[in-house]
Length: 144
Image (cartoon, rainbow, N blue to C red; front, side, top):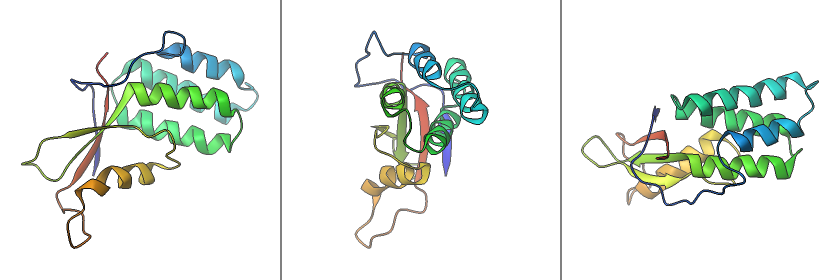
């Protein structure tokens, strides 16, 4: 199950004054061709979601949608967006309701949302190779 939480209480990442917050997304938008309306609109949607800071899961989903639409184009500009996402968003996982949430960084190399979720759940794997039935993943915004 995937959910979203608005903030976390800890973050281990440091901020870059040149590529942080919406400025990173604005630079990414500047690198895009506005005639590619599907990609441009997806990037604008990500910027709106990031600014609102209401739904971290939607931000992550939009990030992977943009990655798919890019298909390898604008590598450096999107790398900066992925670095921003790693600083701004967190993955939290727990084995069940009785367990505490464990925070993880959003990986830079994740290609799809399900891949990132499965990687986050992997440390919870039991001796028989199964993930606990009550395991839960959520995305959160890192503390500002």
